[in-house]
Amino acid sequence: AQSVTQLDSQVPVFEEAPVELRCNYSSSVSVYLFWYVQYPNQGLQLLLKYLSGSTLVESINGFEAEFNKSQTSFHLRKPSVHISDTAEYFCAVRPASDNAGNMLTFGGGTRLMVKP
Amino acid sequence: NAGVTQTPKFQVLKTGQSMTLQCAQDMNHEYMSWYRQDPGMGLRLIHYSVGAGITDQGEVPNGYNVSRSTTEDFPLRLLSAAPSQTSVYFCASSYFRGGNQPQHFGDGTRLSIL
Image (cartoon, rainbow over all chains, first blue to last red; front, top):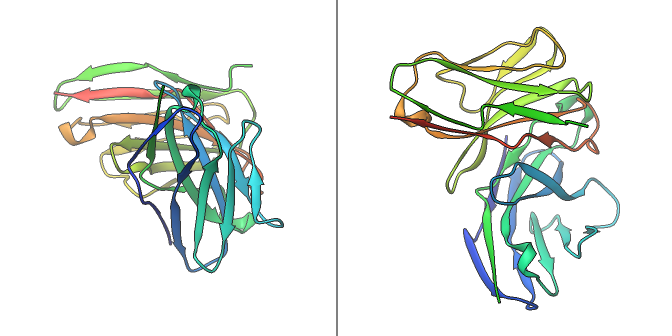
């Protein structure tokens, strides 16, 4: 079984400041890692994912996350946030096996609030 | 391209009533699932299906039934609604195998049980 802990339920930050959203996971097997974003009154959208290879993964809108196996972490960062980044962010994992299906285990979410 | 469509978007029920939340996808995805979202708890898996005629329980299945008669549709039934089932419900779909298959989510159904 897997579990995911997002250490901050809310993160307020001023526009153009850097931000880090923290995610730690626990699993007895290798996992794939994901960050999803949820804008108000919408469903979740995939932001970025780590499957294998380079431990630093990037999204098209300036977010990046680094997989740290020794610390079992997958923190999300952005060097300069915009008002439009205000949303809830979810970290998720699934077993790294094609036979495991696509069942995700989610963290509790972090609400990013960007202030002008 | 509709993606994943959920209906209704909002619903208020009285305790003991039954209802069905509808979910349809037009991407020919084998895998479909239902999650509930509660504050501070993220999304928790209720039921999932890996193909027509095949369903299984997730983390929080009690009080919910599902069926999968077609690839496209995966309805969620509340047989006797309880206030603890007040939540936002999301349906998701994806191809079954392969870690690089993202899940596609609907916009959610906001359900209140009085």
